[in-house]
Length: 328
Image (cartoon, rainbow, N blue to C red; front, side):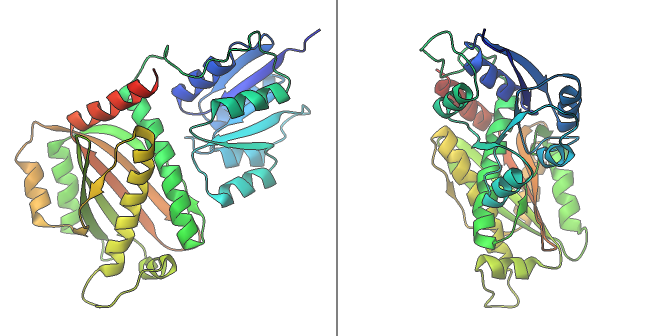
């Protein structure tokens, strides 16, 4: 008799829930459970004999690291498969040290996940596995949030490799912002929120996508952060190190996003926030922008890098169309 296997998918992305279910739904002995954060995941583990848990690292309420640190909560052997956009080597090592059994990066490889599932006892009714999610209801914001999450993970890995320090993975805030709200946010930056804050802006274009990135740097270790990244200051009256850091923050995200949607980007040289940007956004109060906002933090240094990507609605449509094409 084939043993039934209970599978818990603990991830804040509904798309990930649907994608894994879609891939494994041909299993005759699988029952699925779902959680959108670590707290819900622990509750499920407490009440159900979960055989396999797919666990995301970056979630609201309680993240994957906190879940791992809380285990075991009862006497049942659950196989833990980390499924995360955070692909920093340190993140992988910490997960395995905390008891995770496997680590798969997002976007996950369907064949790799299928073979691992078979190895763990799942039985497929057919030799033909489904390798796409064409049946999913396509939510542009949800899709963009997952794209952003993966791009942030790749970006954090790039920065961590340069820095030699762990970068705390952020939860991206993906939303629409009115021009008037954006203008107020920029005005607040220009009026100064502390002497340690420096703001850099950088434009980018590619494949019909037009956008601008705004990077705010906080903390007393900004120049030490730059030194560790290999950036040097030749003129004490210029923000060379800050500009180089901002460029790395923006370019690492765009490179990872470019890989996912197959659109190359070109970027303008970053510059310290200028008056034109504030004026540019106050002349179109009725316009709505699409924004991605996140904060990178170095674990060992006093540095925060807040990044705001701003795009128009046409750019979101371009990205959405690319994602839709990839699903078919």
